[in-house]
Picture 1 (tube, rainbow over the protein chains, first blue to last red):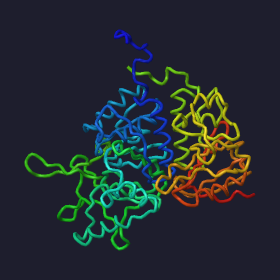
Picture 2 (cartoon, chains in turn red, green):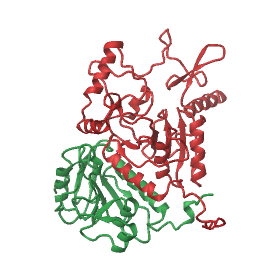
Picture 3 (tube, rainbow over the protein chains, first blue to last red):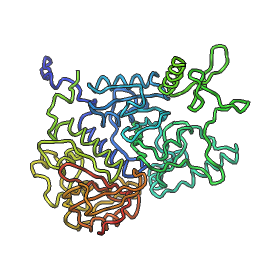
Picture 4 (cartoon, helix red, strand yellow):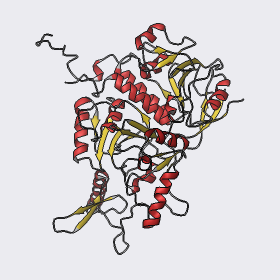
Length: 299
Length: 192
């Protein structure tokens, strides 16, 4: 082997989107099967990515296998465009996908990769939301064998999961799952919708945009197609509850920054020991702030 | 440090950029069953070959009983040929009634059900063959007109897909457009 040999310039680089074309083609096939079987965890050969598994490699592989020069990409981490995971993944996409635009605006994006939130602004039919999923299987807490879980999923047998929820009600008068709430898709498969808060679960139902879930470490891809029922697993007499952000007086807390009372709030611990609440979705917060400021200027 | 997609020939079905665009058309087609999606223009292939070039390689098996793909293209894709019962992908002529039983997957592995690419004469809107579609991806109902699809396909498809999650997914394609019928789509009509 000649140590001075260099590949010709045209080959001395990554292909567009880092993944090779065979990897993309396999992920594309799996995406189509995942859409055809809503909620089914379709296995795929998750590739090694230049970042640790558990840092969003599943969502990233979904994004890279479908992205093209016409796309505008938004990457969020807990609603924020500027937290570390989002910044790193966005930089990686900018590095490996020349000509792709990136944005922080939900409305401008054609592809959105997300960690643990659904954007506040309702999505459109021509947008795709790719979730980064750490644990894809909701049955793993009640059945350790994957072979048995696959049969249970196929039969739509979620009795043991419902028993777990029932035990919570008996012990605590409340289902104690705060995020990753098991959700039934199209009346059959129950999915782990990734660690989104309960607040976001109703927004999976009859979504206008395609929702794709990629679990890189667990090597699974699943989908909630547009206009598909997504029902949180509950009992007839115990309705599903979401976070309500009421204070002790029963008042809905407002965002400390933009003042809106209709978004999901993050609780912040301030230096003086007090607490503040602020929108988790930074794009939504900036938008609210800009519209109130514009309103003040015109008055 | 990267090869931008745009330096390559765009209108060839073998170029990565073409395949990315065609995949997005297919993904939209599967997301919204029954809606026609235009395939990007290409200079060197027709509908069924475009779909095969996007989805097939040497990892999958294909059955092409009606010889709709040129043997040279099959070799280029490196696809393994298989019998109709075992193939992951089937390419068929929609004008003829299906006389085979495709793979439907199993309860634990429904993704092993076949993807059937059906070449039809035209997906342009006509009153010839009005179908009403319902299911995931469709808000209320979706109308679909197909010419050149033998009606036996609908009956056979309903039989293949009667035990969800097992089933087979259809991709209808003419020269320029594509419509997907995943196994979850329920079809009414088809008689006129």
